Image (cartoon, rainbow, N blue to C red):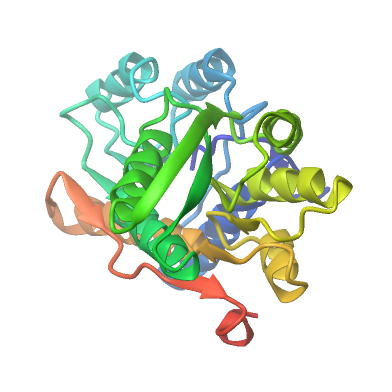
Length: 285
C-alpha cells in the first residue's frame, strides 16, 4: 500500500493522522482477508518526486501482486503507475484520482457531496446569510478541488458572501497565517470553512489569539484532534471520510480481482457522508 505521507509503524511517528487511519484499516483488513500488506510511505504529503522514486525502487525489487495507492499528484504519478500496470500489477487508486484509464478502479469518498453537506450545514447555522472564508487544500490534488466545489455548491443554498478563498496546502501553520491576515483585513467574518482538520485547527488558533470566538469554524476529516476540538467547542463540525473503511474496501476489491478476475466500475464511491458536530460526537468517540 502506497500512502501520501510519512508513517513509521515501528515508531508510530507520522506526518498525517489520516494516513495512520488508512494504514491501520489496511492492517486490520489484511488480517481478516489473509493478506500480506507492505507499507510504502512517502517523505511528505506533497513530495511527488519522492513518491515516484519510492514506487520505482519497489517495482525494481519485484514480488508485488497488487497495489493500492494514495497519489500525491493525479497527473505526475500516472507514468510510474502505468509502468506498474504494464508489469501485470493491478492498481487501485484511493482517495485521490489518478489520470489513468488502466487502473482497476478508484475508491473514493465523494468529496463534492461531502463539501456540499458541510456548506448547507453552515448556511443553516448562519440562518441563511453571512460572510464566509474558505481554506483550500493543495489544488493540484483533485480531492481539494472537489471539496471546494462542494463547499461552493452548498453555500449557494443561502445568501452567503464568500469574502476570499486561499490554499493553505493542508497545513495548520499556513492556515493560521492566512487566517491572521484575514482577521486584519475583514471585520465581519461569520464562518471559516477548511478542507481538512489541520487547517481548521490553524484557523482556530488565529481566531482565539484575537478572541474572535464568535466565528464558526468547520473542518474535513474526523481525526482525533478534530474530534477533541469539537468536544471542546473549538470547531463546530467536520466530515468523516471513514479512511479505514476506504482502505478496507480498496483491498477487498483488489483481492476479488486477484482471486476471481472481477472488474469494477471506474469509480467506487463510499456510501455514507457522516457530518460530526457536538450533537452526535458521542457516537463517533
